[in-house]
Image 1 (cartoon, rainbow, N blue to C red):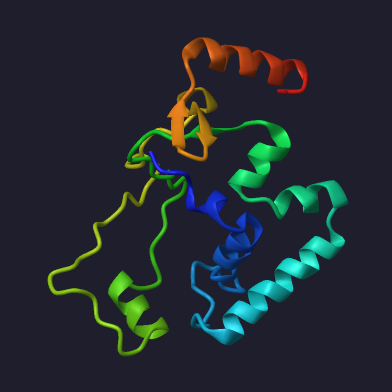
Image 2 (cartoon, rainbow, N blue to C red):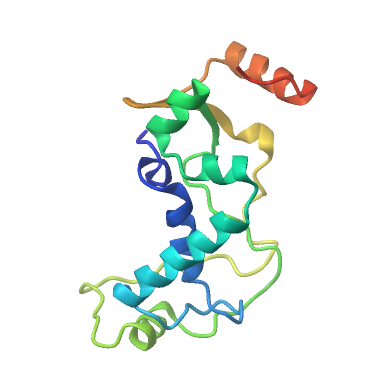
Length: 169
């Protein structure tokens, strides 16, 4: 399994970039702004604003990529969601438009590949898959060569330390 893209580069700027796509009304629409100089400038400005206001220790950690985190902390362990994971939809909902209509509205002139169609997702709580529990997510060790699931014994040890509040070092 590859290292998450988020950890390869600047994790904080990647998060801000993705969140910046969310429409200002939080109504399921995308922000009507294309990638480009203005978009990148806005993301960098929001990132700096957050870093200036954040707790210094948290801000310092948020600037690190995977190699820097490993050098600083010794290891990076995270939960891995099962393959094919899709978040469940707790309430019935209706999309404001089709995916194709949304693409046409936000990216005029862009055309989907011939024959490409978006698969319909469940729209009611009864149709949605059961929610993923924390115990369903395997602990995974991320390192410079890739990643690997932790053995059950190592995962139990880390979970016990995390529950007790002991540092994981």
